[in-house]
Image 1 (cartoon, rainbow, N blue to C red):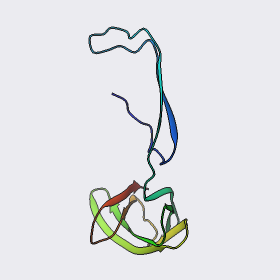
Image 2 (tube, one colour):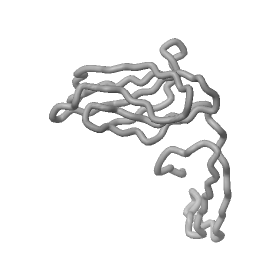
Image 3 (cartoon, rainbow, N blue to C red):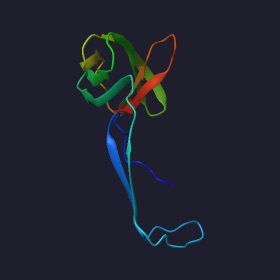
Length: 130
């Protein structure tokens, strides 16, 4: 099983290398290093650089076609208790950074950012915890 350390960016080439010391299920070493390259496909809408600074949640959006809309929803939690939420719909006319003003987090609170393509189709595009 291969576990990635993070999300893969679209239209990016990656190299995977397995050392000769890797063992198959029967505990037999493969005895030969194996290397392969692969390139990811282009997504219609990508997000990166999610940050929370004071009362502003921000994210960088990159779209293959504009205009394109998405909905940012931030849920605030304290432990397992839901505290409040904030939402805003953005329409991308140019790639860049988009923000959502939220009430500053109190002690012990965490913010979860969800990005949906729309509230009608409900396809989740991103989920980050800050």
